[in-house]
Image 1 (tube, one colour):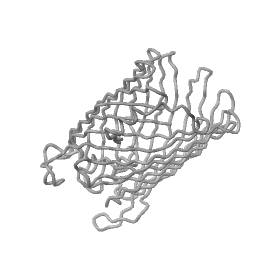
Image 2 (cartoon, rainbow, N blue to C red):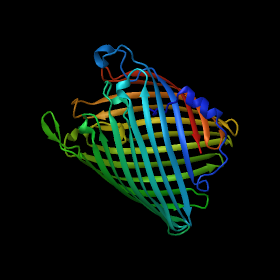
Image 3 (tube, rainbow, N blue to C red):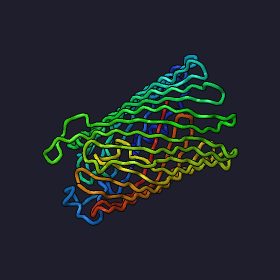
Image 4 (cartoon, one colour):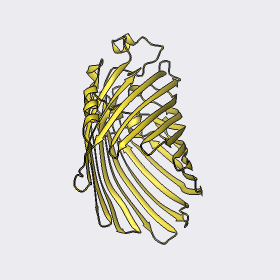
Length: 398
């Protein structure tokens, strides 16, 4: 679910009435911004129509209006071949009715895009985010603040005009504020790959990847010690093909093998893939279609193994220099295998459809509105839900 970013009516009026900024901060390397939004959500806790909400959340009301204010800055400074980037934002999210789930969050990122020569480049980066977890995996009136941290180092070397060697290593950690310590997880990955690159920027290559994960804290499951530790290895083929001036294919296919130390029925061996076709029939229209089969990311899953298979279509029409229309249409099957808490396999099928319009009167000012609908069916008796959302958004930068 997209995070809401809220606005009060008076704040929006003041923003529209304010004079256009005529100065640049630190030679235009620094942007300070405020972003506000109102979101109407018809089913905040993602409850099934098959249950009585009063017995689950203690309230017959399911919908609410969400107001979120974001204050932040972006800083970018090029130094010779290097570039340094720092960004931070503070989020204040408020519910009109369900005030007990109001929260304060933040996001921080820093990156050094380094280069020894134009042929030897890479980056060092760190990201941290604290947000309210989606209620889709909880379906209860229990706020769960998720703090995720990720450090990454990458390097790419064009050994010759046709051969590219790359490496990538990451270390991540996800922590939950709710009594869901079972879902806290930390992992580390390493990858190395070699690709052949043509003068037309087409490429084909191979990569090998290893990953380890574990529970950062000792937790109990049904009174017994439980560790969500696993190891994963994989080998894959990745490539890019610029078919025409208007069409491009990007993709990767891997064969992976994941093994858990406990609840081994979650073990998996098989293919994963991600392929994107980008079509630009005109200079103002772009349609990106992505098909994927992959393991769900850390912040979206429970202690179980989850395989996500789906397709997403994202059209973007730049109607004018200042107005754009965007869509998002997706379908995915979430296959939960060997859930340690429920003791069974189950699956969700999720359909999403949304459209939004964005008006950018000035370079750093934008105003938008959108509507979206999400429908989930499930093999669990009350795992299904329907939710409709409508948003108004304003962002002003200086």
